[in-house]
Image (cartoon, rainbow over all chains, first blue to last red):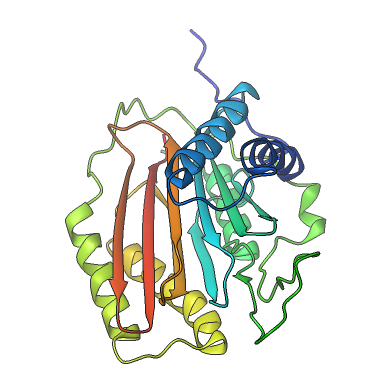
Length: 114
Length: 177
């Protein structure tokens, strides 16, 4: 009787790949749009859901947390920070900053190995 | 239950690299004119694993625990009150200023992580995020979605507001199977 061996993540989280995926999603949803109070809810929801869907298609054994903040461009400041307690060999994170004429968008992806 | 070799491997990795903190973001604002072409954000604080660890990046092989779920679930209510206390204590009397808030986001996220770790919930990984912004009529929407096992994983969140700033803190707790 063989004991089940968990497949080890030998390369850890691929941040490059995630970066590209997220950038494409944001470009697709927000590219060419101006800040609009009515649509903003829908936009954040679709950015996050599309990112998750693409990440899942990679087929890796990870749990994902995707956060998205969209701020109207104005004279006001905004700061964000995060702190993580996990296994640094297998888990990782990726952040994408995107902007256009009327708004800024920050998307964070955290991937945690199962 | 972990074999001795595995335990050494994981703890060695954790001790050496510490925690990975993604860069904090800042969008500086000048008076009359500000750049629209390139991103003007700066990376001010990054703790990254050193390159030499690429060679030994094998995740530890662990023995089967035969455990189907967490023995002790994550106490969301306790963590909510931790978030409330920390944010109120640090930000109650503060006015928004770029320097202060840049430092504050990093400090607060570290403090929250330390306090939640003290609860000693076994087998849970933590992700703490903090957003601080100036509060004066502009619009902002922050959203998040997670792909996880809802029976064992959870999130805890708190928003603090005063006259000049707002702060949002989230703690995501992921069960390590």
